Image (tube, rainbow, N blue to C red; front, side, top):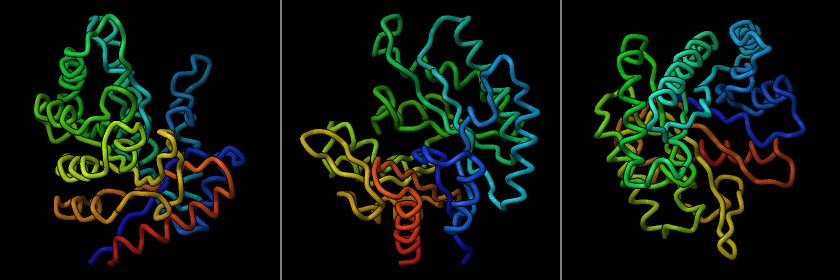
Length: 273
């Protein structure tokens, strides 16, 4: 049995520079990290993101951390041809930066709701952008993992319709275990049903835990919230998931490194149970 690949997202470590974050998570026991597109200044017109990516790759290699993915920070809820083309070209460029860093996975958003794209067109809009990218992704062996995040894609049924509409193994899900629950829209039974439903489409993960208090989400260490994360683990294993098991630690107070350590221990216990 191969050892599971264990990672953490570069997020919620406000007191750490990127260099400090990488060294801290390596010491804790992580070997992978999700890198933000802002870490290579992808949208900074005064920057050279390819040069930034090469510098960061050298540091990642020195520390011994491999990127699990790069966040795309996109918005595919667009229908206007100029907006679609801009999103497609931006995605291709950031995919090139990701490959410099050492990963072929982009963790994408669905997009933001907006008046010019009515709700019944959300899937069509996102599928339109993704279909435009499929030939590039297949040629370059790039994978787009759409997060169940925000107000558009935080719905397992919608996600499944989206993936079926695109119809490519290069487009799938980033399964965030808590996002379905965090809005208060779904009860736990529905959350677990979505975990099982989306597991076969999953290309990347965010293992996240928390609780709802007065309809407000509060992040916790893995194992300290209200989710039974063993359900997602079992569903992903049954689906043959072989990607990185990525912690997304969102607790806003306390020692971030200790939270990352406790979350890693809990995830390891789930994966070896």
